[in-house]
Length: 265
Image (cartoon, rainbow, N blue to C red):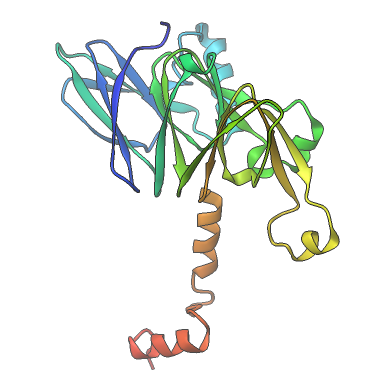
C-alpha cells in the first residue's frame, strides 16, 4: 500500500468523532480545525498541500495546495505522526451534527468524489484534489455541487455528512435526482450532471433553486439531509435585524420577548 494502513473507531450518534489508531511511524492528515484530542508521542505538523506520496518537489506541493484553494480550503493541512514505540490514538470531530463516513479507497478503485467541504481526515498518502467538471452546464449552474473534491489512493479516508445519511446503491442506468447541496459523495463510476427544474411556477415560487443534480449508476451515492449551507441559511434568517428579535410568529414572538425580559424600557 502507498497510504499508511490505519485502524479506526467511530464514537457517538449525532455529534460523532473518529478515533484513529496509529502504529509507530504511521500518520494521518486532517483539515485544520477538525482535531479533537491525541495521546502523547504523537507529533503534530502543519504541511503544505495534502502530504500525499505522489507530491514530488516544490512544484508538486504548490500544485496540490493551489487545487485546494479552488475548493475554498486552506493551503495547509495538519499531519499527526506517531513517533512513539507503541500504538497511539488521535481523534477528529465532526464540525456539526451528522455522520462520519469511512471510505476505503482500495474498495472504490482508488478514487472517490465528495462535496468540497465533506472531507475530514485520511491516512497519510491519500491525495486530496479537485474533480473538475468537463461539461459547461455544471460549471455555470452547479452551485454547491460544481467543484467537487476527489480522494485518490489506496488508504482510508473519512468524510462528514450533515443530518441523516442516506446510502443509495444505483444499478446500471438507474438515475437519482438530488439537491446539489445534499450530495455528500459518490463512487467514480457514477455519472454526474445538472438539470434545469423547469416550469414557471417551479422557477419563481418553488424555493428549491433552479437546478438539481442527476446521478446515474452504477455506483454508490451518499446523500445528506442537512447541508451546512442550509443550516447556515436558517441560522442567518433567524438572527435579529436592526437590534430587534425576529421571534416566532411575530405577535407571539414579541409577547414572549416581553415576558422573558428581552424588551427593556
